[in-house]
Amino acid sequence: MLEELIGLLSLTFFRRALIVGILVSLSAALLGVSLVLKRYSMIGDGLSHVGFCTLSIAAVMNWAPLYFSIPIVVLAAFLLLRLSENGKIKGDAATALITTSSLAIGVIVTSLGSGMTTDVNNYMFGSILIMSESDVTLSVILSVAVLTLFVLFYNKLLAVTFDESFAKATGIKAGLYNMLLAILTALTIVLGMRMMGTLLISGLIVFPALTSMGVFKKFKSVIICSAIVSVICFIIGMFGSYIFSTPAGASVVVANLITFVVFRIVGTICAKIKK
Amino acid sequence: MAVVSVKNLCVVYDGFEAIQDLSFSLEDGDYLCVVGENGSGKSTLIKTLLGLVKQNSGEIIYDNLKSAQIGYMPQQTAIQRDFPASVMEVVLTGCLKLNGRLPFFKKSVKELAKKNLEKVGALALADKCYGELSGGQQQRVLLARALCSTEKLLILDEPVANLDPKATNELYDLILKLNKEQKITVIMVSHDIRCAVLQASKVLHLDKTPVFFGTTSDYINSPEGRKFLGHEHCLCGGES
Image (cartoon, rainbow over all chains, first blue to last red; front, side, top):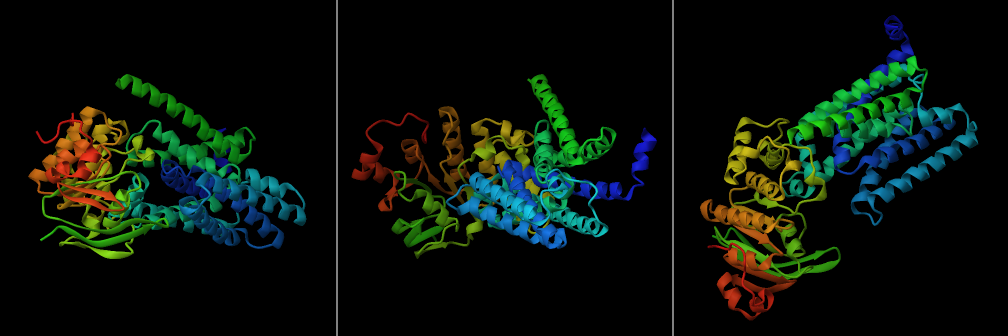
């Protein structure tokens, strides 16, 4: 069994998926804590649907998927933030609008092109077979950028997450950091969605954050724990998907779900003992 | 010289004329309570003082102070009540400007945060989770955070909203102590008018235009003050 799993690592497609997946899980977990606390959890979902739309268009037009998706999804992130901050349409409604419209456009484009084939299924639920070598390189570069920016601006992101009006009053450009958060989220989602699936990628954002908040009460511990949980769940999900012959994206999310439940139970017991 | 002087201030906010022709000035160590009905321009005044809203005309002059050096204590938001952060982490968010561009906090900055926690009597809470504190304790922590960004001027927006009477009195006493002992000028907006007015040394009564500006004792005896305060006695701590 163990040998078989180690043997998996010699497969190029599996290795690529593992590298990209670990980096994406790490980025998603870090950003997720802020997003969940700011009540932006659904932004991930909205953006991944925009990503679905761009992937469909790219496939039909035969364009390179990542290079086309990244700018469009980043643009959508800008738009979502603008709408939810000062628009007449409130955040959750704006997300719902963008989610359904992108899905609709994506489905129409696909059916006009190749018809509803396995492509759509792959976009929706992910596939670990589609990572090319240049995708891996781009993913590594972008993930490193996401992680570096997050560490550099960690304190400011905490300040803006905790109290935007105070942060603004002390001269921190809160709007700028919200944008940074949205752009980093957009990048993470585009990188991860083809493997995890449009419908499942936002699981990577919300689960690790909520899991660690069940046990830890300090921001730094929550961040560190959610990064670790996210990476471990991803690896378990990937090997689990091989062992049980289940789809990779779904297996990763289920691994996250189980961890979430375990952490919540542990957290409740700890709280009871303290009392 | 006045810590802050406001001259002929007019502000249009959200398409409405929120403040019209407001002038007042505060001396070092003043404790101003801003009162008025909802929509009278109190919050707009605070936002303008902090530089978050641009005035349309008039000017705000600070003596030796930038707007980012004001200690601001905003109203609590729903997000904060169960926020997973330690008290220390929360207070340190008030020190970001002092820390410059560094990604991690300097030792001197951490010392400052501790000193300010001590000033509000919350040093023992430093390692606790902010979300698990009582309402009164949370407000103390936010006050400590505000102190980190100022030595001169505190602006408090409804500091006792949602607090029980005991915690309210304790917080008022603390603010008064900071005002008297640290010589920090305080501007406070409060709905809890009677107690707030008795604490303060000066009162600004706003109704888009200033209805009254002067000392507390003058306000209590003025027609506006009597109308607004009613004739009931204040039951809370006050200055005594």
